[in-house]
Image 1 (cartoon, rainbow, N blue to C red):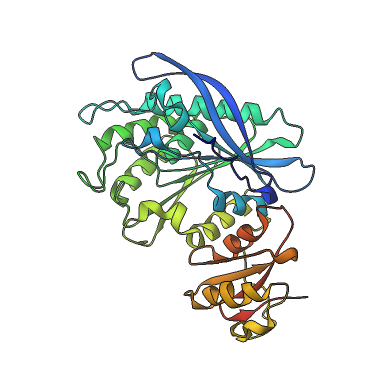
Image 2: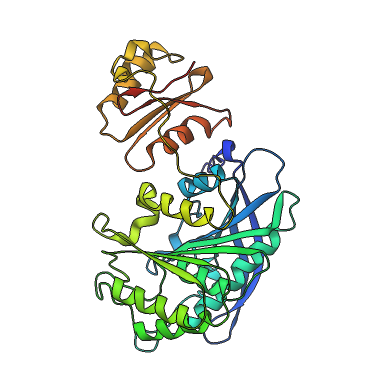
Length: 365
């Protein structure tokens, strides 16, 4: 059997992989040890950079098969804001699944939510401590963010009041949800309310809680109850209910960058991170002229005849990026401009520029 080829990392955002050893306790107080697999991204330059830790969610049925967590489009948003990014894959998922499952809530009749959150928070704090040892990380500017169980993890971590935590973002956070058997209503939702209330007594950093109207894991009624319990206990947070998205708004973070990024930009700007992460459409230099394939610079005749027509056939929103040496990238749908640039730049690390957005040329030679 041939060995697997080496994994291609995104050179333009300095992607790297590190391992952080941790020991946690599960709901039965049993110790579980292993390495947290952490994917990191950094802007170009020496830093020091503020740090954002991005926490993933959970699919209990497939946790052992989970690939390395990257959240590349989200990382690119934060790279544009000047952040270094760390994405931990916590114990119990993917390569560390055999070590145990410290985030298991045990049973639907009597779930143990707080131990799961506490175990997840220990791992996030270990990753933060590891990253802070790096010379290019600013230990005084930390943001924690997560989706689903990662949002739950973010709240649990914020409750420990880590040094340097400026703000935290919980997107669709919760535990114990099942969209098929209990749509919108996780196991014993009132116990989650109690858990968030307990964390609200100690959390001090400002937080943004963001949920969608059609979240099939955690409906708005439950989300608001948890938020109110958290803030009534003394925590500082704001609640943002997003409009319905797709067939399940629980996927907001990974499928609707164009929706959540402006909200997060505005929230973080109020807490000192004013550089925008949202990509605005560049000034149009040729209205409607992207339809002329013969005018596209830097590409080969084969790319002009075979690749560029695929871009033209794609639905808007869409974007096409170019670089020297025949490098190109195109994308359509959510976060199209960022994705097109990423496809063009990631293998060499050399910069690309947008040539077209939708049917308009935005290229500046």
